[in-house]
Image 1 (tube, rainbow, N blue to C red):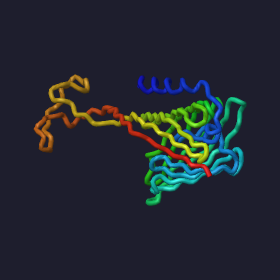
Image 2: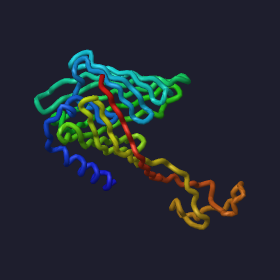
Image 3: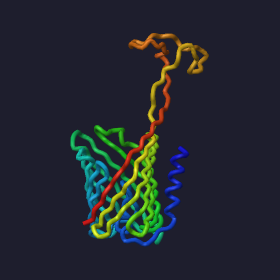
Image 4: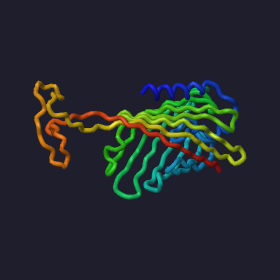
Length: 258
């Protein structure tokens, strides 16, 4: 836990100051996956590719952004967000993502709200949403989702960004630091970094014979298992324990403006 907080603090400490850069302003509405409070410029369109996710975003007005996407062609979703400028330093956005799989009877959604503090070239965003699923997804996506992200531009062609998520219902932490590279002539963006996750699940552990593992004053009862194992456990009184796992792998995203 301490390591995740330390990584968040180190990354966010770089976002205190920013330099002017047109590249940072154009693609300021998004980090890797999560949105910021900023909207796209009116009539802007971009294609975004994040691993298995592919979507298109369009801004029909100065404050409204709408999109259509697919996760590896296994489903289809629509999303949208409305931005509101609170003051010169703060911008907020409300929106949502809703979709369904290409096979099966189900649906999923994620209404959200975010608030961004700073400027497009140096900012921090706090967000919250609630994921839900129906049908085949029932229960899999239900729960609160908390988000913390930030970006610092280095002159308009490179930058450093940080995106993280906490899903309290399933006790999962996700963190994704990345470098952003921008080519001004082609208006293309590359985010290159890694995704790290720490998650937990409950596992049944069987107590060892001869010990009072549940502290009820009685030693565990001897009982032979039905399988080929010769180890003897008390299978009538299993203990439920939480197991923590972690993984990390490279992540890449690409955005192209038209």
